Image 1: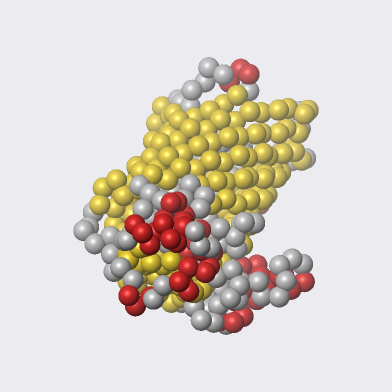
Image 2: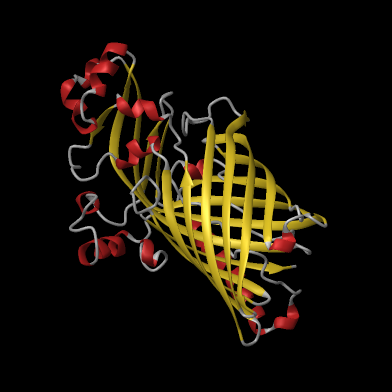
Length: 403
């Protein structure tokens, strides 16, 4: 029911967008402003509980209020893994010399003196985001937004490209081979998110369960002293309030991004953007029993983005963008060198990814198509080629318009 409500709300927004594209005089003017990019933040099972920062590649502050709404769908998968963090320094040294997948055979699980957490993820995470942009001064703007996520079984047709069946069809016929991650062993199109953190707190969620939500505030300043060289950049300050019962807290962050424009002729141009963010996770805890979603207090990210745009007859902008996104690890990396991972008895292929890659920097590629007239509509597809705990495949659609 929650999934259906999210989709219904977004369909209303898309219907408005399509109607407005046909009735250009019914809405205020909206022009292309920099790289046309919706939020491409992944539906990472841990990341949805914190206020990660989307990079901003606009050329200047908006001149009127704007609203954008987006819906995202990401397939997540990781079989059950129990993780033990040894307390004994001697055992840690011993484990450093043993391959991670073999350490469980050198210890007695019941006799370990160790910290412990357990993870299992399966399903399609649906995300709904909305942002209202409010101009404040000539070169500054305020953005107030919300986000909400639910866990679903991702069955056709509501997920289409992100269903388990489509992904395994791709593996069978294009790349990956026969069931490379043991999805079929545990059953397709299921939904479960089991997590026990190292403090002993546990949740076990299924199809239709609400994961997290939050409110975000972003303030951007756009210096202009390089604009005559067609170099544009911005500085941002960010506050995110996480409102789920699993993590009620405030995150704070800062960002910087720059864009260079290359004009090919009067109807074709290329934009190249680079951005970096830093987030202080759980800067303020609003409750005493928050789950532990990572031992690193600071999360950094980097994005490189290139976009080609041509202007068709009728002054419609068609933009094709390619983005590379890199984020630092949620957990401190050294633990992975001595942690003891215990797999599910039924799992054999790639069974450690969902847990071990909490200790690795994550990265993914995103391909975006946007058409802009008085409404900007974006579609994207995202792929985690290194299988590092982001969705195996994620898609999204976004509409943005002036109000």
